[in-house]
Image (cartoon, rainbow, N blue to C red; front, side, top):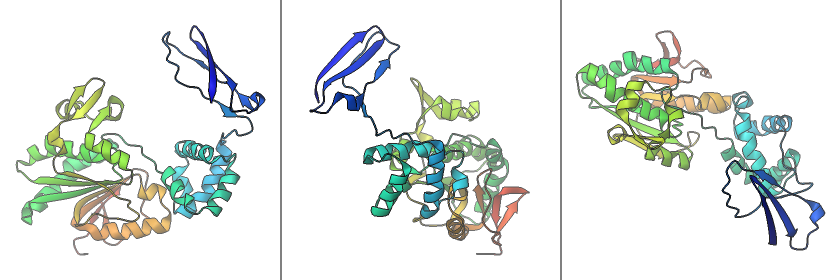
Amino acid sequence: MNNLCVRVVPRIVTVYIEYLWGEKMSDYSFLTVTHHDDTLFCTGFIYHRKGLNHTLSDTDCISFLQWSLPQLHFRWPGFRKVRRQVCKRIQKRMTELGLSDQKKYRQHLMIHPEEWNILDSLCYISISRFYRDKKIFEILNHKILPDLANRRAANQRSKIHAWSIGCSSGEEPYSLKILWELNVKDKLGMEPELHITATDVNPGLIQRSLAGTYSAGSLKELPSVYLKNAFDKAGQLLCLKERFKENIRFLRQDIRKQFPPGRFDLILCRNLVFTYFGRELQMAILEKLAGQLHEGGFLIIGAHEKLPFNDPRLLIFENQPIIFKKNSNNS
């Protein structure tokens, strides 16, 4: 495209396209952008072709998700409240493919089965923050972590192994590590080592986890004493101190296909498997999770989740329906 003419009015930029490789101007609509800064740097323009409006209505998106999610072994009820995040990604993908509505995208999926893998990646939900569900971390602080430390000492094991599933940008495993280092470890008056494995399917989020740099918004629920002692300020951001990154291993893994090696004393499987996955997939994963727990180990699920079946190996811990302790009489 060439012969781009830009007329600048204070705080208003109107973009005109004089010539579009021979295409009729009547086929295009123009964009007016209002800025709130007197200094403008115009490096290009945006336009869209009339008749290719890729706006995906909420009704159409719901219809599409209710059709497609089960085929990906997801469940629609888990996506109901967060669907807009997914709908925006699907709309963008439809635009990339030049498809005008969700019916055409369905047809595209049927003709191009490899597109299902792309759609699967668009359905990933990443909502996390430090110290999410404060009550859980209080129970970890006062009950679970001391119990595990005492068992470690009794069994002469030098390490406690924890696994954070769907760790997003590292908020959950780092919250656990901060709690351990600044509170539990000192109270116990001993030097057990907490080793954490954190997994997520999204490579970008794994990289963010390794960086350990966060905005204030993701830390608003973290107790102020932990915030003060665990982070350094870097402009508008907060950087996790290096000591709180020790003994944490981040792995890119898809829980539907991969499990880290070894067994664990604590598994945090919150707001992923038992929210978004279909029942059969939930059952298969739960079977494996129970197998990877040490006897006396703990499984914690999300505040609004429930297990797909009652596994006799997993007993509800202290009337907390989302915390389970592995029965010592089962392997």
